[in-house]
Length: 195
Image (cartoon, rainbow, N blue to C red):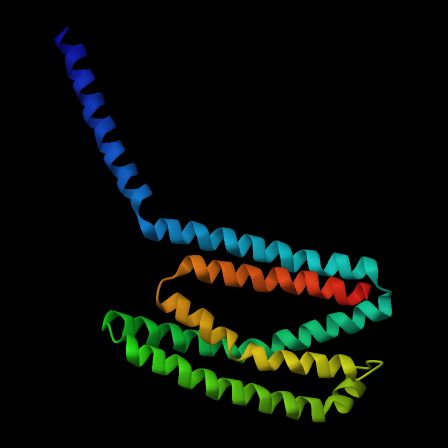
């Protein structure tokens, strides 16, 4: 009888220990953030993957090759803009912990204007050499290259906003905007092909 009581007491204390552990783990906001970002990254990967089979099905081989070239070119050229997201996340986090909201707003406002000007400048430069880019990549028209250049206006400002959201730990908004941008890329790419 006493042995049964000891086993029961041991199981109860072990059960309570596990309940406390699971309670702490499930209440941890960082775990929630990680699950949210993991789910977002999986959905972004699905949207990115679905883009190519849809485009390949809707287009001829030559047209798909041209679009794939433009998508690859845009990804390569937008890679340096991710540095902006890292810098914005660092400064937003630092300014948020010091509770200096005015300086954070000023930082975002000034950097938005600067990055928007840089994006417009690069877009104009890219549009001016679009015929050379189209010739180099054996593209039929330079209008597609000019449309690709228009992406640079937004591609310099978007990482600033995403980095700021990440630095402020607003991961719900971060996940929503990230997911929305890739979903729109899929829908708009298919829409442009169908038109």
